[in-house]
Length: 336
Image (cartoon, rainbow, N blue to C red; front, top):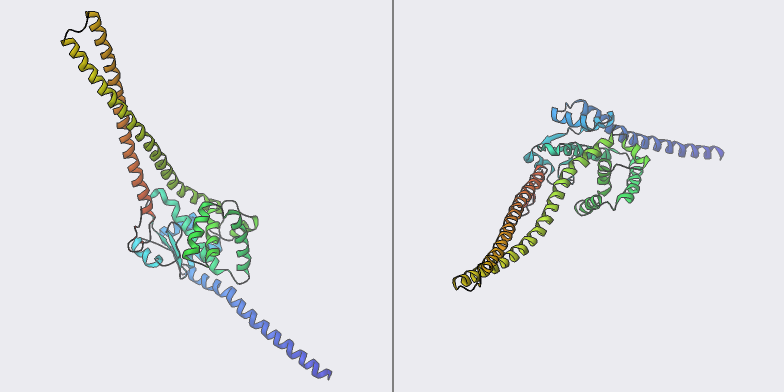
């Protein structure tokens, strides 16, 4: 009886041990198989000069550099970029994508937006790193991301981005937040900051780059909005002043005609009365001439500001076109 019980117990323990070995083998393969593949892929990829420059700029840890190279990142012109990123996840500015374990970056030519390429590379790298989190790590990372999101969810840029992803890519919100938070939010919970230290030796520099290239848009947009408001106010005031000027001019012309009529009819009682009336009209003429000069100067300045505003609109369009790596759907303008 005891022997049978012991035999049964050994059998159960043996089965459990066998199961543990299977689980360990599966887990080990999952944990280390991807790493081994990354090591091989990275070792067999020599980054082109432009990719190497981006890689150096975002200051990766050795492990993150291995992942970055394993994804064989490519910096592409609009036509090639469209082929790879057209139907995949897009960063907010449509500058890159992580697709089938490859990172694709749009080749931005505008020097004012040079930092955008680096920020996008870091963003897409974090997608690749999130994709590589194992079954034990991902829930822990998700929890950290969720806690951080609760602190920043009222940020207008974050709210706008998440509104887009909830609609365009439901279910991918945490993955997106993982990339967005890591590249755009300066102050993080200490635990989450330590997590991102796995990938970046200077994450603050990436956040600064993001702020720098967004500041270009913000500066031009703010300047255009302020100028638009100024023009609207000036336009109304100029219209009112022109109407008053025209009314005063009509009255002056009428008074001049009346003066001439009286002079021809000999209605002035003395030369002194004539001279006084004439002098009064001349003063009014002088004042009106000054008003005319000032009005014309204001109209000229207004027209100069209109040209400036139009140039700013062109500037905004140029900036948007610089980052418009993905074609818009048929019937929708690709930039405005």
